Image 1 (tube, protein in one colour):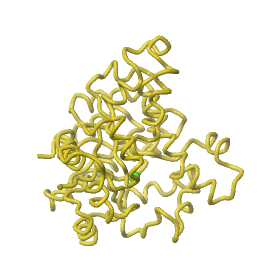
Image 2 (tube, rainbow, N blue to C red; image 1 turned 135 degrees about the vertical axis):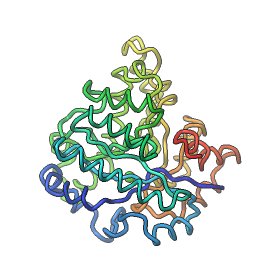
Image 3 (cartoon, rainbow, N blue to C red; image 1 turned 90 degrees about the vertical axis):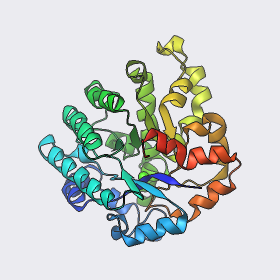
Image 4 (spheres, rainbow, N blue to C red; image 1 turned 180 degrees about the vertical axis):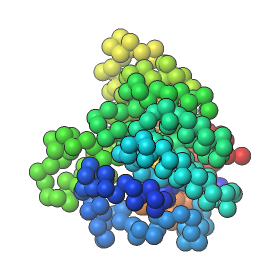
Length: 332
Ligand code: CA
């Protein structure tokens, strides 16, 4: 079984250095949330570019290809800084991938603080650098607005025009949400609950929900998204959402589950739990599942054995392990 994993992260020093100060102002708790000894702690060097260690981990875990991305937040930078930096970061990623074209591909990072420039950079990244779409970490702005806001329409239209997906990756919540929902516990609990324990998955789920409810997919019917962590909580609530928010209430063409199943691909992001797998394949179908490990935060070592032992037909496993990714990302 050939496995292509598509939520696999690398760092680019220039990008992380430029983001250090804005991140320490916007989300000072980020750096402290993953101490050694707890899940998701990684040594800084594990996130560096393509190393022998990364390739040997892939071999040991049975991963044929990783689609790499920066889980960075260039939206915290003003356009004058974000535009040249994201171009440089995408050039760098493409150069790294080019050394091992059979083992790696990648998603672009975009200067979201200037949506027109982000659309242009997506086009350059896809056409000139052969990257396969873009990954957005969190909201596209430090303010409490999401990708459904009108100013981001050029980027979404460009993704549709280029036939590439946008990976909706989680990110930290806005301060007022963090204060209201996640404060008042011990520091480490507040930090981890507001991030990868719960809060940033809720953020990613809300972002996709708002895109559906604001009619993005009626206006841009070719747009495709990818959601990690088995769909960022939404699949579990689709039947309730259809009941609570039918077309009569939303004025949309279809039920919410129709949009989700036709416009979102889901990936496990290393949540290798069989109950999740069984539920998602029943709700979404094998055509809408793509594989991911979320390396280096999650180890690749269970990736192949989990899918091999999963209760699914051989053809469904082939779709999930590589055929869907190859089709969506045009990897052949
Ligand atoms: Ca991730």
